[in-house]
Length: 445
Image (cartoon, rainbow, N blue to C red; front, side):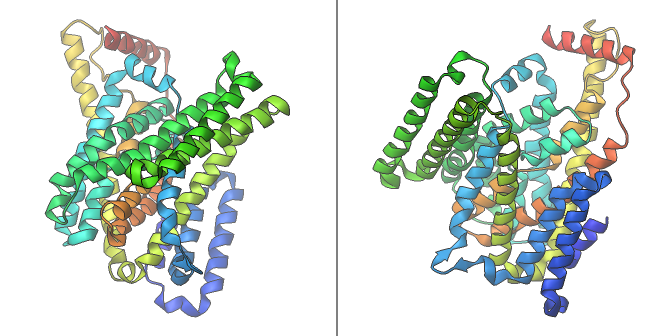
């Protein structure tokens, strides 16, 4: 809870303005200390998020405009870059996981798109938020899972494959689910253009994620074509050609999808060229992407966070503590209902299968590992997606403020929960392993 205390303190910095450099130095020192200590290394990203929050709170004007360049112009491409990075963590095999074990995925996605938007709406009304800020609270609850949840599931000893699959499928569903939820719930606070939001999700989220999937297959495929110079050059040239066509057609003809198609084409071309040079010609490992892209994604998240804080500094000072309370409530309810909702569903399904003769035991069909994973996936949303939609569709920095406050808290609470569960490893004996095999068989049949 020390980290949470630091976050709260950053919400009211008027009294420490003369000591700005010293405060930032302390935060950076703490972040470096967290990185160096094995026991708390899992909080490293959270620590650097707090460094960025503190820097933006103390120097808000530094993140508004550089010369004639407005930093707000970076929000959409940074969001797309983050989503591309998320796509590279996925593979086509994620589709097969749903076929093999559909119930946990379907349950998790259902809980995510029902609990979180409704909870956001109730919290916004209960705490007296109005207009664009209230809409932003509903928006963060209506978005799909974020890439940070996959890391938290791994740290918590959860089912990482389930986490990745849930993130992927909730992202695919988002173009329909998010606009409909926003129209139904946030429409009471501000006007919502559901069609425009759907197109924006395709541009900012779906196209970059698909490009990331393509990049993943190019880098890690074991097929012959992925190791042939001629075939890889063809991929590079095709991606460059698509980028050139996008530039020729321009936003006038491609409309809102222009930036997504252009950036996706350029990134696929760069990844293919890197594979050609590093992997084929120099015969080096392709593990560089596993380090580089997560770093770029985290840097992008921090940059978006600082830009939004700078744009909404005065409002954040006024309502920051109340927004933090809303974030804690929203996030905590998501974890709790995600965990116990999956437990309850698994218990009922186990009883039903036992009575139907499809299982020799009436125990839950959802394992402890799956319940932990669903809890994290339900409780953690895609803050980058919510921020981008707030800027591009709602045209409001105020609507982007809740996603950033919530996103900061989600990284803090996710790290705490993951490390708490990490200290309590799941015990699996032979009986439980056999039960799990029976449950998989029951699901297949």
